[in-house]
Image (cartoon, rainbow, N blue to C red; front, side, top):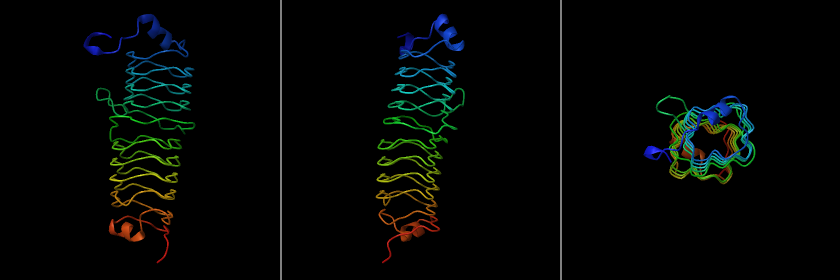
Length: 239
């Protein structure tokens, strides 16, 4: 560790290898990798655990099976990377205060078993998890305002006390999800599968539930109406 407890910087040879595209799989844990360029690299099964990756670029990289546990990924560009089986547990996502850049997942449809458990300090900005497979993950208390979960598989996930204002869950699989205490103000859940979802104790003011089947959900159309939510062709068991 260097002074002030920061991860050590790469030496000039290591940095040159990265910028020339000559890295490849390896152990990059506990390193200062701010602003490094891993674009188009094959980094399958590498580990970046505990590393400072603020504003690093992994665009179009093969990150299959990569470990990002406890890494700082604020401002990191992960667009169009292959993220099958990536472990983000304990990682920090969101806006880097110095550069103003955010963690970027946009343009990528997640596949495989992505682990997001324990992620921290997610800034209230739009993160894209379109098509993400993050079933069973615990996202309780996270700030995910305006996040995009369209067509994502979130079955069994927990969003207890999460901030989800303006989030987009259109077409998502939300079976058995728990939103106890979550703020879904202005969120969009159109055509989502809410089978056995727990939403009764969530804030749903002005949220949209168009095309949702409430038959086994703990919400009723009366609940939606009372909250000023829209429901269109939402259905429930009749009295």
